[in-house]
Length: 288
Image (tube, rainbow, N blue to C red; front, side, top):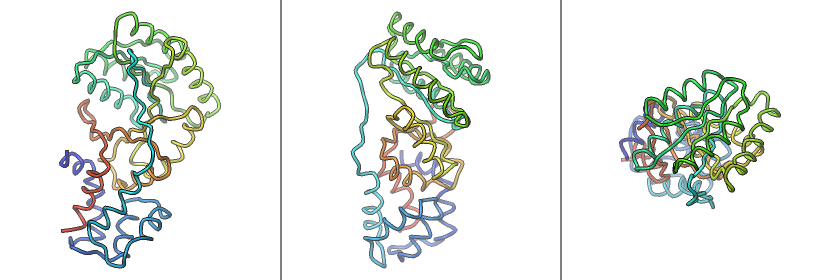
């Protein structure tokens, strides 16, 4: 797992090395500040983290400061419901479709059966991409044509899962934030229809955030949370950016569970987020 976090944070750690090329046992406070800012940690959060630290910082002190960011009450929403229905939310380009394939693969590897719902009917490309993944993974999918009612896809997917005994339902959604009012009403309708198809569904609304956007992804998350309420986060594309410190800002601002981190483009490239391993991977580049 440590090696996987090292892979994900490779570019972030390269950026850290430019600020702090030599590992030390003790680091000066202003140097630690520069490192955190270089990794795209929000300035206000950096100031808060540094406030309780001495002028010369040991690794243990740095770890104890950074880990406080994740010490909030998070609702790791789980349900024994079968099927367990998840709705995947996020702006176009964040990696929703690829992440759905990764989640589906993860459930498959755990011996669970899965069905997908192509609920982003706004874009033909989204339907086609998800259908390709379903075919590649040999997973059933409920899909329709571009422009059809996404709530009908939600209903049909859940009804099929109930009839055929599927344990997991994963539903894609549209993510066009520039028409926020329309999107908000569409998502709310999809949620209402899910509940009609199976009381209590969707059991988890998972938001996909693009790690390359750094701290700016927080605004997206707040917009979606205000629309429909978000239950958890998956962060994608961290391996392609030096903004890995933004995870701290995201956790601090949103105080939501971060379930997974995407580590690449393949279905197996998804790891559970562990705050202590994430922090230690960054500190490995700073301290001896």
